[in-house]
Length: 137
Image 1 (spheres, rainbow, N blue to C red):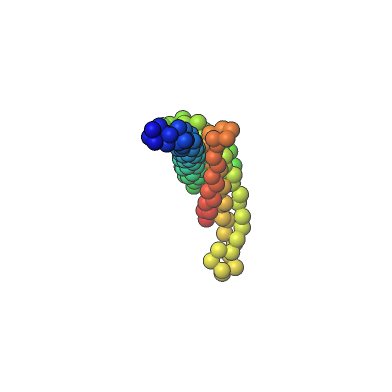
Image 2: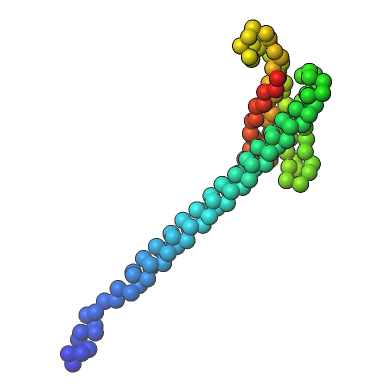
């Protein structure tokens, strides 16, 4: 008789504990998925940034190759579009300025060429841009 009397007065706590555990686990899964998504976006932007840097570097090297034989800024083209592996869809915008400066400090003016290459890769939210500046005398 005493046994049945104790069983009737007991209340279960299993259901609230189970709901609490399931809620906590669901929040952990959601947080981890958001962390994974933001990490993936970060890696993608880092790759685009590296591609833009190499596009700017390649544009500067092409501009130097065009500038050295003629030694005038008019020989440098303004936009280079790349269609090789790794730089496909990237472009480099080039600017050239010629300045007269006393580089050696002896009073003689020397022509100094300032090349600015801006590499651009991607479009929209997935785009990246890097700038490289090169001086040639």
